[in-house]
Length: 250
Picture 1 (spheres, rainbow, N blue to C red):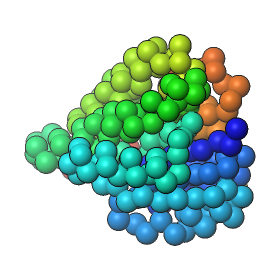
Picture 2 (tube, one colour):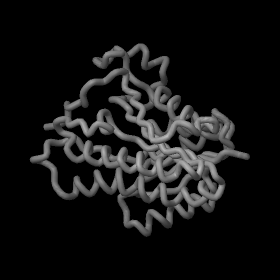
Picture 3 (spheres, one colour):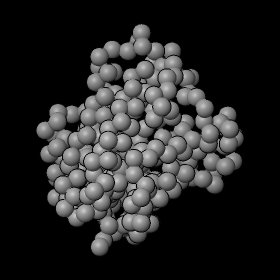
Picture 4 (cartoon, rainbow, N blue to C red):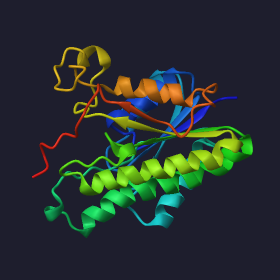
């Protein structure tokens, strides 16, 4: 069976590296979604790693019907997908006194609603095949609903994603579908590979900056065919980070 993955929000950032890593790991086709950033660089990386590629423009803050239409188009063009890596998740870091309802909609529509819609799109084919892998993204401490200054809405949204993923994992386990969550740490430069990151000093306990490769390795582990006994898990990839970065929480 040729494996097919859909990686959302993968025109740049961590998801771009993850998409290419899946291609290098044996996936025959990797599709991505993008919002504004042109997807060509990621598509070339996917194809350079040995897989075919595809891209669909989807704004996960858009009307529900527009999002569903875009996902249907992506599935028709490159699916059905046995793997979903849902990396879309906008971030707003501000004190609650400076937040408004537009920030609320962006955090919950962009993180929680988007995860629900994406899962609904890919799960029917996974259930039919009796096999599927879904990976969502939380934030540092979201599995424990840990509070950080400046993260009132973002933290709440990411904790909701974790709760959704854990319940979904239970419901879909009999169908051969695993659902897991990764909590990345404060990876500021998302283009840096592990070798370069090891040269960059960071205040986290590990002492070095994180890289997209550190996150991609955990994704590759979770989506492997034999990883059917790991589901409902939340894995931190943060170098031992103990608190959220509040530099922008004015």
